[in-house]
Length: 491
Image (cartoon, rainbow, N blue to C red; front, side, top):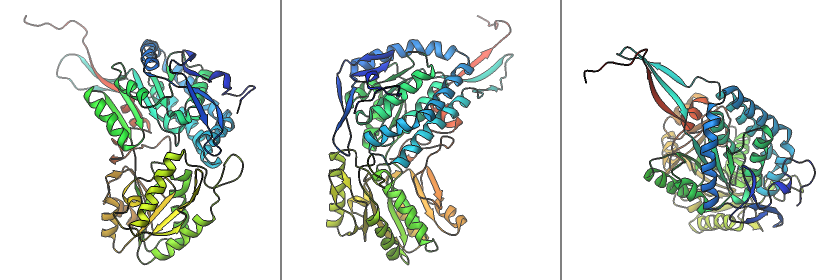
């Protein structure tokens, strides 16, 4: 696919190039941008190597000093313009999310809307007070002042490539930092070029945002660079552990938003039609390729059979296909490796004793929404994060058992509880350690104004969203004292 005309992402601006001081040739060459639904090549994007990272960091350090010194009004104006550009070019960006990421159209609308909102919220963050007056026993003024960390490294995945990059980029820039973004090379355009072009058009000064798509070596170079004191990483728990270990050795901060195996608890008094609808959305949205996906359906034994039947009926009737050519509920998985992983977890669970109530088949990268009934608690699709459209259902008999099942995982990202008694649901949530809880909703949600993060193997807590979390993530506290005259000492 060749993009021409006055589009935001004209191919000539990114074929074989990386972004930083304008568009420059990548030292590591380029790679195909592939449409997973068809296997067709949509274009070629520059792929950055370690040398590109090192050069970008040096330039970012220089540019950041000037950016931190400008008025907050100027930084806020850039972020507001970026928000408007995400809105004005939403359709074009959505087209790329459909073609490159395999997203259905409603999901792409969420991404561009949240991207704009992240910019608007960041614009407001630029003018927030970032300090406090401290008490002091001496004749002086004592302050705690938040200052930019300098250069922030952002590593974002393929599944929600726009949101999971911009939610760190926007507040980091608003607070006076420079940013090095490493998007997943499989979504280099929707998760990289779109952001670069928006901020270029918004008037962000050169050198403050570098977009360097790349693989493991690129990420390692970014994490290991001594001039990048903060890494904001979203991805798998296994990769996040490696990032955290590397940052720990280098004594730098790591904000880690990792995997999940989130539970949806359906109590006996829940409306079954609404519950099955919520469960289907939570497990099958974007082919289950979401960290917050409903990975375990814990259903009261008195209604479990009927819940499985209704969920399976929905799965059987959901259309699966190319979201660029038809109205479908599920598009393709991102690549064959991910498809094979999903299928292995499903077949392994059936071999372990689960009953296949729906799905379990695929054609190309199109995997049918799958419902597993009677799932043993040791089955791989129940224990592991599937990252595919799979809904394992397990019954429980008591509130205590539901809490124990939901808590019996290394992950702790999101939790949904469905019940006619919201206060009972909230009391149940207090027994289960997660970073996010939704009473009478499924597990997948995100807003620019809300704190976001998980516990346990799901990450290092709330490091994204909302003014306080963003300020803590992308600034450091400096103690400052001031006297009217030089202090006298006995030496």
